[in-house]
Image (tube, rainbow, N blue to C red; front, top):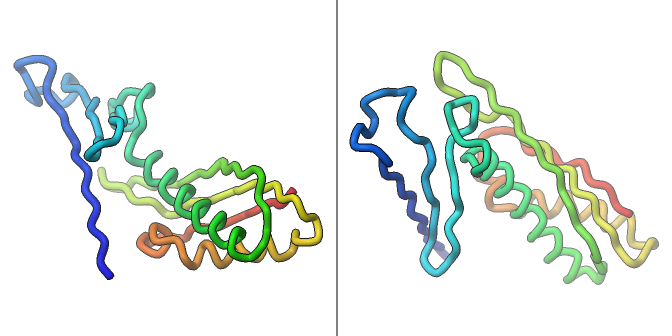
Length: 151
């Protein structure tokens, strides 16, 4: 089965000068999808972006974290483990060289609260399965590590 996803990215110069000057044009843009609220985005402040908006690098890390969480919750539900809280302070590392950059790793650190303490070992193992199922993690060419904690 094939799934297709769409998004639109919109940018317009607030001044008539557009991109005449590398240092002067705005990196602010909007990301949207049909029927959903817009995401206000920019480039990373290191690349002359707006720190008050999401940047593509943060959104990539968030996509990996979100995909892992959704698979994990699914696997817990079908394996009889009741999760009552889930949080993740994920981080990614990107290296720049010669003006280009690429991610070299992402580290997920989910902290999960479950109701049944007797299920702790199984709940921890399901993170491995979730990682194997995550569409986004399976699509990237850098390591994604999962350092989970079960409470």
